[in-house]
Amino acid sequence: MLEQMGGFSGLIYSSLPVLVFVPVNTLRGLTTAVWAALGVATAILVWRLVRRDKVQPAISGFLGVGVCAFIAYRMGEAKGFFLFGIYASLVYAGAFVVSLLVRWPLAGVIWGFLNGHGTDWRSDRRAMRLYDLATLVWAVVFGARYLVQNHFYDTDATGLLAAARIGMGWPLTAVAVLVTVWAVRRAGHLPAARS
Image 1: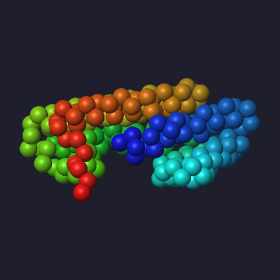
Image 2: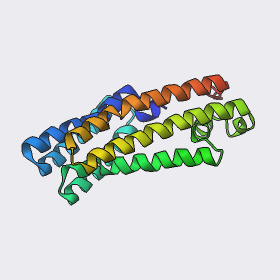
Image 3: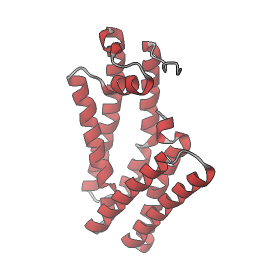
Image 4: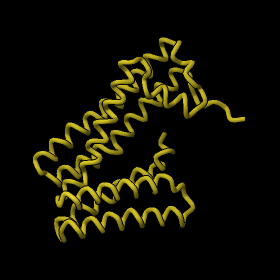
């Protein structure tokens, strides 16, 4: 899963546009901040191309920054930069909760799809409980992100919103990944051998 996000470097790179956006907005204004964030996202994409790293995470990151920058620019407010991420967290939290309610925990579904296990794990009660737990952790992570960041958005605390975005970003993702890996190992569903 970490590899799909671009590894540890991908997690760090995803924080850089936010780290640039907020202080530049404070010092130079919204338009400059938007261009600075897009510039950082572009530089990361070029850097990954030059190094011949996986570019998919950088392209996704660039598009994400582009959407966030567009929203902020259209709203005319710096806090708009965070709006897409706030509502994306709400949607993800809802998807993980719904998957629990319909007894198709997303952690198991995604893992089974990515690693060739299909859905056979659903007939194993122990595996279901483990994937339920991993799915619940992801739901809590996304739900917490939505609640905290939406609060800072509503109170116009852009600096705290940026800190929450970074602090609740890759550190909480790392916790959820660790719980998911633990659940996968306990369920005995390591990646299927490639032929």
